[in-house]
Length: 191
Ligand code: AMP
Image (spheres, rainbow, N blue to C red):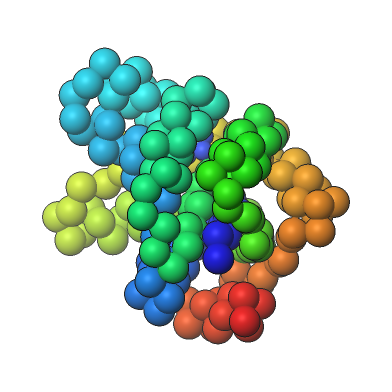
């Protein structure tokens, strides 16, 4: 079973993806994690994406589609969880093509619904917790980048909700509850 977790920054996509990995042996494909790795590797691509990410802008479709293309050919385990991908309609179309080429299907798109006030509190809280624990704070977990990430979400990613609804693949989940409540709801939808 291959699924997409869709939602704005701070909606809990990464947290829910990790739970699905543990419970179902699925494989998490987070383009954000892949890009952060590329950034830390010091490659040319890494240098380019570091600045884009810190501003809260989206990295080019070409780069992220390339990252996903590599992973999708590999081990599928209990299925892929696309976490933070696709983020544009062009990425969604590319994903459909890649899945078809590799003889795979997209089985569900789970939209995590959270209101904007909560997102801001969660992300600012995440940065404060990390700082207090002496852990590295994400370069884009500050108020200015967050505003830009939200803007990018509403301009470029939120149209995917309508896109997958029209394809009959969208399932919406209330992302406001406690982590285990949300994961219970996801489990119920996935069966
Ligand atoms: P995330 O960890 O999913 O919040 O992603 C962090 C940042 O990585 C985003 O703000 C973008 O700059 C970049 N990014 C992650 N996934 C994508 C994607 N699918 N398309 C474009 N940019 C992405």
